[in-house]
Amino acid sequence: MSWSCEQIEARLSDYLDGLLHPAELAEFTGHVHVCPRCAPLVASVSSLVSGLHGMEAIEEPPRLVYSILDKTLGPRETLAGWRAIFGWVRGIASIRLAYGALSVAATLIIFATASGFNWRHPKLADLQPATIYRNADRSAHLAYAHSAKFVNDLRVVNEIQSRLREENDLRANPESTVPESSPQKQPGRSDGSKPATPRQQNRANDLARQVEVLAMELPAVCGGLGGL
Amino acid sequence: MEQDAQLVQQCLQGDGSAWEELVRRHSRRIFNICYRFTGNGTEAEDLSQDVFLRVYRTLVSYRSAHGGFATWVTSVTRNLLIDHYRRTKRDRLTDSLDDAMPVVENKASTARRPDELALLGELSGQVQTALTKLSPELREAVILRDLQQLEYGEIQRVLSVPEGTVKSRINRGRIELARILQQMGVRPS
Image 1 (tube, each protein chain N blue to C red):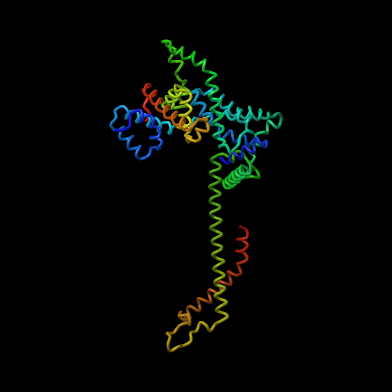
Image 2: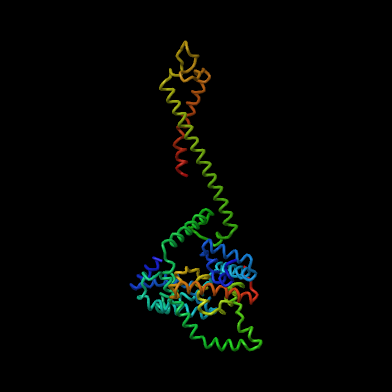
């Protein structure tokens, strides 16, 4: 134990700040481990420094910055008349805020329209929760019905188009349905399907007639879709 | 640091918003130094205003080559705090004579107001009480090192004393503060 208690006290901060060389550190810790006077001192100062480092900054009074600015730049401009009334507008005028306000307004309009609010003849009663719920329910059902009808109409149009195509193919190549005999292949069409039987041919003729009927109705269907 | 220097340049060209930005960036730190040194919220607020007033008036004398703006402002703060300490020394001497009298009001005069306790927290309040019992030289050294966490070199520039003196003051200040807290029955964890 070569270091004295006075030396330990003098180098205490160097120890806490990690500024001791390895040899000095060995001397320091060697003394502190066996000295009943220095051990509690090192422990208390060490915990004090840790506590001080962990302390959070105190918040300054909110008026401090304004007081400083008033003292240095002079009192802020006092507004009067219309400028006092609308002075706050300048503070909130920003592109980001305008976008935000526009988005909120658009969302409200969409919700109001979806809930069945009548913009042409607005009534206060339309804003009651029960009315909003009823209108929203009605609008949702109507939207569902319209979309279901639209899908069905699309399906019909698609069916007509496919049948017309088949019919045109049959008229253009009536022999293609009859397979060419080939010793290597089994009887059937060149694409591997079997030839049409008389019964199937009759069914094709029926389909052709149905397609003609549907084709006659097509303008009416398309008019119905256009009405959506 | 570079941003501070740029703001100072803008201030010198008459840009008020640059000055406002500088005040906002440094007001909390300066208020904390003043509060830790004086232990009084009102005094700290007044002193913080005086600091920025002096900084504003002497901004033209600031040279970034001589150190960062933060160090310069801290140096101005320290000088004002020492001036304030010397100016109010007579009042404190009277207070300490009053404290020596064994009267019931003693407790009330040294006790902190509830709002101040709420501001500080219990342990922080006790440390603050102990700090105000240190000599100003040791107090400022501990505040700058352990509460503001400045490097030794920065403290040396702020206090304008040799590095050895800075280290010695910090060491003595820490040991003294720990002893005062021990006498108060406080053990920081």
